[in-house]
Image (cartoon, rainbow, N blue to C red; front, side):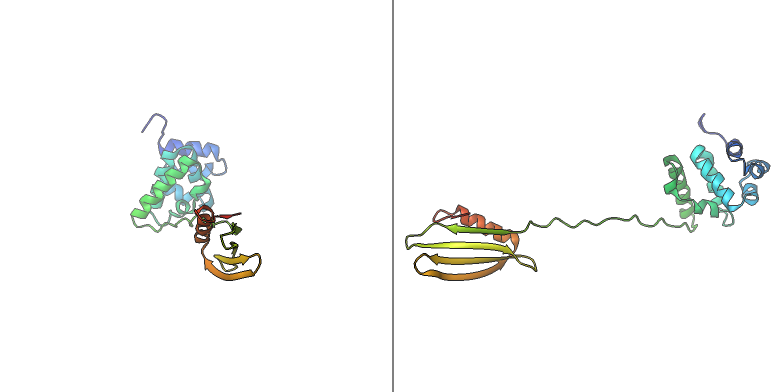
Length: 196
């Protein structure tokens, strides 16, 4: 025991001073955990234990272990919520609950923390067009890529002649990344690259 830690009887005396409503039940127990549990009501027992865990963690842990071993006195220990206690008290209570659980005492499990699921960022929508320069026959190719309602991309390819009109028309369906790669390669090819 360090110089800062005190024994359970001294810690209970401090608790009696800090909790005057329970002082008349704390002092007659003379530091005996069993007698203290019998004289305190459930609400007062939880208040005393919480005060000890917050202000005298070593003594609070000792009292919680003593109360936790007896099913008739374990209720105040099992009823405390670690999340509302300061960090040192939370750690002490978690140690006590772990010891009790390892001894076979049914310790209530904390509900799982609520998590907010985030969707993976989707590819941005695609709505792009490219047109090639005229080839030696006076024909140019036009590409139009637009999002499909069900996902993916619809890619339109048109062969256009200024004198004869539309020579060919094809529609393809692909994923966004594949359509982007196709449009990029159409821009960078050597013969008749497609510009915006």
